[in-house]
Image (tube, rainbow, N blue to C red; front, side):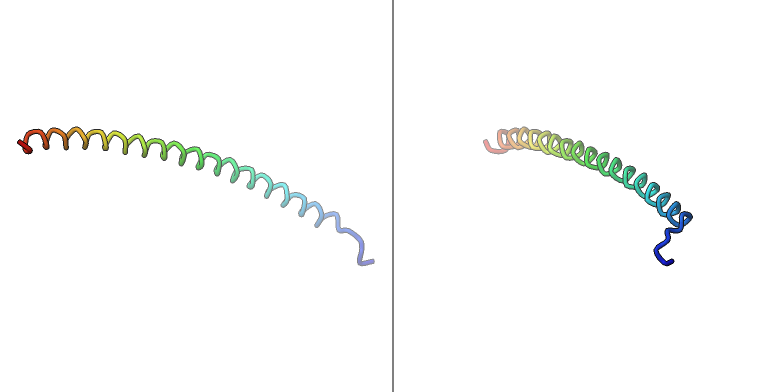
Amino acid sequence: MSNEIDLFKYGQLVAQVEAMEKKIDKLESGMEQLLELANKSRGGFWAGMMIVSGVSSVVGYIIHSFLGK
């Protein structure tokens, strides 16, 4: 009979599926951590841009005040 199920091969297949599910769960958690890190770094980037913009405005004002007269 060619329709018989080999229990040993079926067990191996089940074990492989379970191992792959664990790997997928790890990948999902890793992706969530990467996304969280990217969001944090994006906020830090914009905060840095704001600070640099403010400092350059103050320096530009001072230079304009002293050299413009």
